Image (cartoon, rainbow, N blue to C red; front, side, top):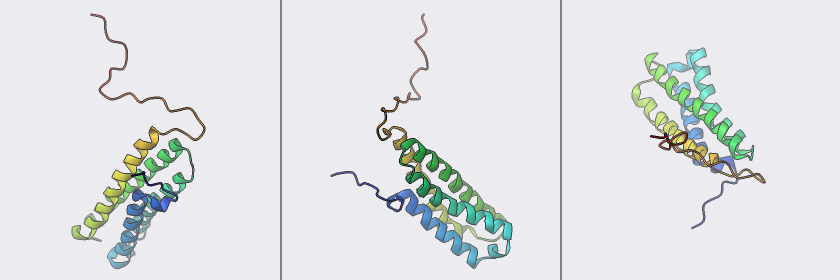
Length: 147
């Protein structure tokens, strides 16, 4: 069976999960006391919306290394979203049960985008030479010591 090809950023699992999480964050903000905490609301909304936006921008860069860079930036925004949701519980805007489904989606997006970034690290750029092989963590860095 052939590997499915993403023709748009909207075809990416990582983008879909990040987008769903963003919508849930917007709903949480609208329906809780977070709507009254301007700075908190702005920061949470920005981190939740930045991740899918960065994934879309990276997808259009066409070069695997650039796309991977944008995915890693999106991962930072996703991590910030998780932390901000926890902060919302600390501030008593949310209860734990409200943020669990959102954090679950964010973590799924993080896993998918991390896997995609690793794949892209090994991909050939269009019309360019193949990438250098990456050293495995268990391989020695230099020549064997003479003993």
